[in-house]
Amino acid sequence: DLRDRLAAQGALFDSDWNLPEKIRLQHLLENRERNATGRLQLPQSIVLLETGALTREELDLHLIAFRTEQAQYKVDVEIADELDPTGLAAPAIDLTLKLLFRLGAVQAKLEECTKGMPPPGSGPTFWVRIRFRGDAQGEIALMASASVAAVLTTAILERPEDDAVAILDTMKEFLNVVAGNLATIAAKKGGRSLEIQAPEDGRPVPGADDHAITARLSSPGGALAMSLILR
Image (tube, rainbow, N blue to C red; front, side, top):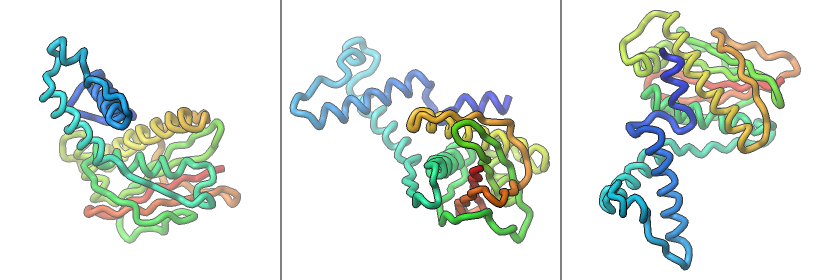
C-alpha cells in the first residue's frame, strides 16, 4: 500500500537500483574518493572486477551515475541558532526539499526562514502535521497550495487525483516519511530520541510559550511551507 511503498524509500530515497546495490555503490564511491586523496593508491574494487560482477567501465559508469543522482539531492540549509535552537529545523527542511523532488516531482527551493507560523494564504491550501515527543517535543507541519498538493499526490499515487481526502492522506504519508527520517538523523547525529506520532490534518496552533519556525518554500506550482513547533 501507500504507507509501505513510501516507507521503503527511507533515508536513501527511491532509486532505479535495488537497496543492496545502492549501498554497495555508496561504499565504492566513498572508498574510491578516500583512495584518491592518500599517498597509497589502492586498486579499485578488486573483488567486483575479478569476479566479473562489474567491468571497470561499468563500475565507472555506475559511480558517475550514482554521484550525479546524489548531487541533485544535496541541499545546504543553514539556519541561525536563535531560529533553530534544537538543530532540528535545518534537517527537517533539507529532508522536505529532497523528498518533494524525489517522491513528488516538486521542485522547490528555500526562500526564507522566519519565526512563527505562515500567514493565511489567499487560496485553498492543505495542512498536515505530525506530533513528536521524546528528547524534543513538538510538531512538524507541511502546508501546500491545492495545485502543489495535487502534483505531489499524482506523482506519489501515479495517477491523477482530485479528491480532497485522498490528497490529505497522501500528504500525511509523505510527511510521515519526512518525520521518520528526521528521527533517524536526530538519533544518529545528536543521540536524541524522537517518538513520531500518527499524522493528522489541520493547521497547528502554537501555544504562547512554543517556539515556531517556518520555512517558506517556492515552487513553480504554488505556495509551500514547512513549520516546526517546539514545546
